[in-house]
Image (tube, rainbow, N blue to C red; front, side, top):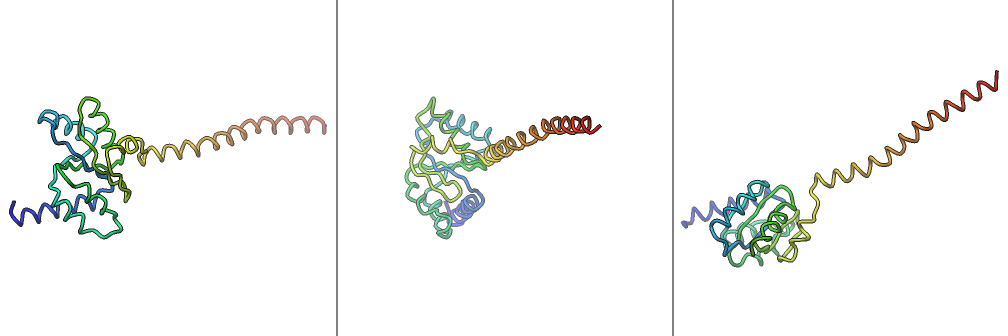
Length: 175
């Protein structure tokens, strides 16, 4: 790889890290070509970009960011073969990994970056797959807000009949 190719690759990685709030570093080594293609297919179906990266180039890309991004712990995970998984939903790569590992030993989670939080180690796959997506959280909030509103509307509707009955009874008494 020439110096200009390395510089271009670092810039490309910088762009990926800058524009993705969720990404996973995994080890997919020892998978056969067929298994890797199957994993890539599952990732593609779920909207995950999967890319094998060079650790030295990834380290240089991560080191170029300021400390507020909290990329420093990820550098320790960049040892051995590394596959980068990028996605717009935090829990989707973990779900794909979990599902794929029902029939294979890998990929193994090295680290995950979830909106400035870093999860190191394969033991975090279950935790990450249980995270709720933004859409799921919004749906939960709507459900929570909807329930009391239904109760209020139901009470007002039933109260309408009660109030109307009281008004009618008062009118009959007054006559």
